[in-house]
Length: 178
Image (cartoon, rainbow, N blue to C red; front, side, top):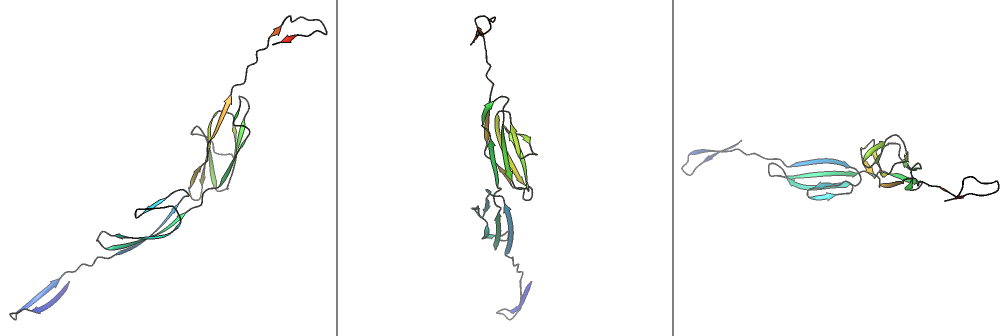
């Protein structure tokens, strides 16, 4: 509260009072960490790279405010997958998916969207379907999905064999099969 004693034109005392409210401007610092492939919208801009960014905004009092953003985009999870065998085989046969990834990752194998294994780096494929690997970094919780592998399992052909002619023959003779 500000007060000032003044004398008006008629020589009388006047008291001028001023209640002044000063609103503050803000400086906000924010740190955001994202997984590879993710983005962050900051002041209307979509950010996809690590760095330091700042924008001016207006706070709740109508004053200028500065927001400083430190954005860190984590590196992509690195892995290798190899199909051992063919992606098409006969019933009773199999193929394998071999995975290689860092020790800090947790792996989940899926067939047709359903979890089939989370313990092994080598998955035996005996059933037709679409297979996929999901890895989660146990430190950052970042997740990545592999490409899909389509596996076809064909039924084994049924052989029908019949004897042409007699099944009773002499020594040294032959039998025809069809």
